[in-house]
Image (cartoon, rainbow, N blue to C red):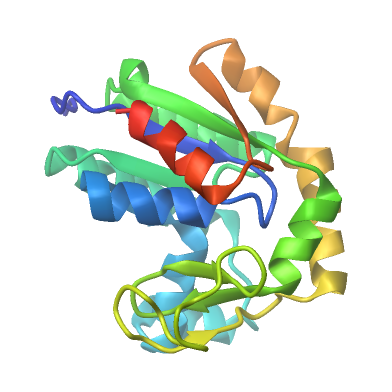
Length: 218
């Protein structure tokens, strides 16, 4: 099983609030990419009370590596089988997760199609963004009450869905997530450079400038 699409596949590496969601929204809507976001998939299963959702609930909301890795592997396989370019969003976050994902790419013979995107940004900017972030749970568009204001209050510009705040999008939780990222995930960028193409994005730049950069990637 080998991807034949001419478009590159992406793995996104960056802290919470860096702009991964904006990247994915643009690439899925404008370029036809398939987004593989573990957090979104887990939220779907919980919301719809699927067998996976029930299993997670039975474990008190805990998602172990076996389940997380299995979900990511199946999503990547499905994307390759359908010959659709994909984006792995927010995974891997640890060394074992990186090693697992690398093996999935090896087994599918798609290593040469992968580009890692490193979103470079400081913690203060991430905290400020998340503190003001609003998300459309219908189409996944991301807004911000200071830097990307929706045309109509609490209403998505793209699909008209209601904007809301994600669980865990508060300052205290964000500080903990950033600390985990700096210690466990950010070092993986250097590891990825040994094998994959890695592109650095200045994630502090205005959204319009970032979108122009994303346009050049494909």
